[in-house]
Length: 180
Image (cartoon, rainbow, N blue to C red; front, side, top):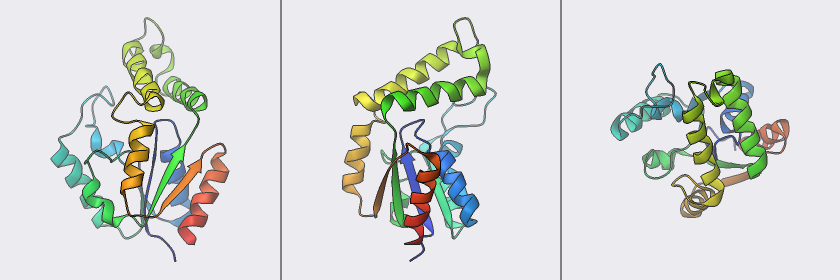
């Protein structure tokens, strides 16, 4: 049975947004990313968080006004859990720590160039972000592999686990699960 409402998540740098977009392109679904609800659009991106009420309201409008969608990103810890009954499939994307951190650093450099290095305007923000991403694997932060596993064990939606060692394979695996 074709699944129409999919939530895809994992640690930063695991590929959830890219995989979600590719699946939507293939199926003609709408793609929504939780970062677009969480962060206010500012000159310095990813620095000002919306209120929980606005986050939930904006996400709800998009999810309820579209029949077929993929939501990528992070919505546990209560934010967005109100929409959990909508998910026909939850896909958890995992990438080993060293590969994930390499991807994150490459992405930051692609976005901000040399400004992420010592003396650059984004150096401190980037270092703080890298530290936050390291905490995912150590379990020290709220958004951690440990917390994701705990959340997955608590939900009733079908769960697909993907180790994203190949983008094409990950997209194909998710597409097969959607069409199963």
